Image (tube, rainbow, N blue to C red; front, side, top):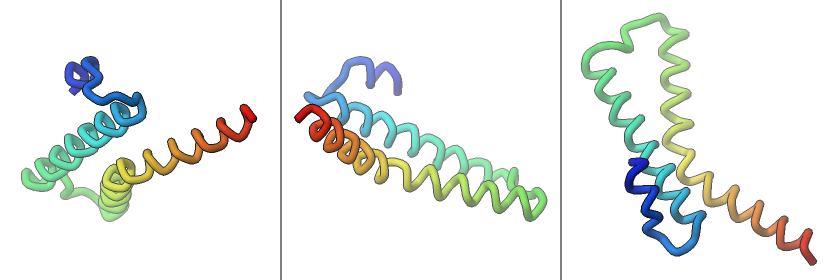
Length: 81
């Protein structure tokens, strides 16, 4: 994934970051599915809650990253004026 990101396939840098972030998110979701498949989540209820919370965060992160980038770019543009 890092090799792909080093080539910077998109024109704007924040598109590269979003693509890389999405790829990492997909990796972690597939890894979590593998852990569930081999019954690694057969732990305590508290551990399952943390696992579920982390999966939600990993799945929402690629959608939140562009929003955060846009907010930061807008604020930076306002500060430059």
